[in-house]
Amino acid sequence: MVTKKEHGMKRPVVGIIGNSHLINDQYPAHAGGTMNSEAVAQVSGCMPLVIPPDPRLVSVDELMEVCDGFVLTGGRPNVHPEEYGEEWTEAHGAHDRYRDGITLPLVRACVERGQPFFGICRGFQEVNVAMGGTLYPEIRDLPGRMNHRMPPDGTIEEKFALRHKVTLSERGVFHRLFGATEVMTNTLHGQGIKTPGRRIVIDGHAPDGTPEAIYVEGAKGFTLSVQWHPEWDAANDPVSRPLFQAFGDAVRDWARGKHTDLLKSA
Image 1 (cartoon, rainbow, N blue to C red):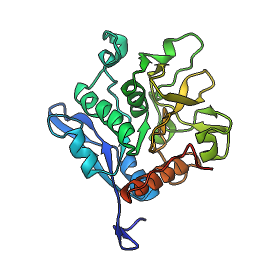
Image 2: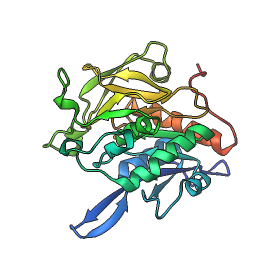
Image 3: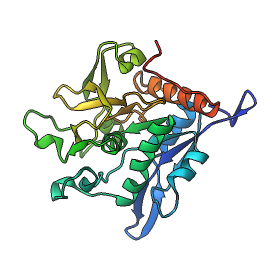
């Protein structure tokens, strides 16, 4: 367990983008999954801080001053298709325009400034859209694609179980991080990248060709993002652990006034 202070230094703060929920069908709440906070605190070694995803309550500038890094979490609502130039249809599913109003400008500001962020599932898709990319509304409807959605039945362990491999670019940043060109991951998403945004490098694919791992080319800070959910069992999973450890190292570097460039590290 990471203590509040490590070697006399305060832990850097990681803002975890929350989601909007309705408790008992009537009480509105902002919340973040416990496993996200656990991964940030116990594996990244940072202090987790859940952020209300609403630009009426917080601003990007304020968040970047308070937090040293960000986790763009998964979430049931999708990025609204108007954010990438398409009209909404029922296939696009539920959306959260308030979260769009925080995360998309936050990604662009972090890329410009070099401040680290880690995109997960919806967060992965937000990074692509923020950089000008587009999304498919439903991956499983495409010819030759598998169903990447969360299994409707079973225990939470069964829903987050490893389900397919991801093949990584030879000598790419994810290959160097994992020490392998193939890893096993879970899969709990309906949408996926259609066209990559400007500077978005697709560094890993599922067996059906779905993009699963990306980063922003030329960014000064940590921008790794994945389509799966590495926060599940992050302390023990051999793929999740190095992701959150590398993110924590990047956040600590930022807090000390340095940049972490994984693209140049061995």
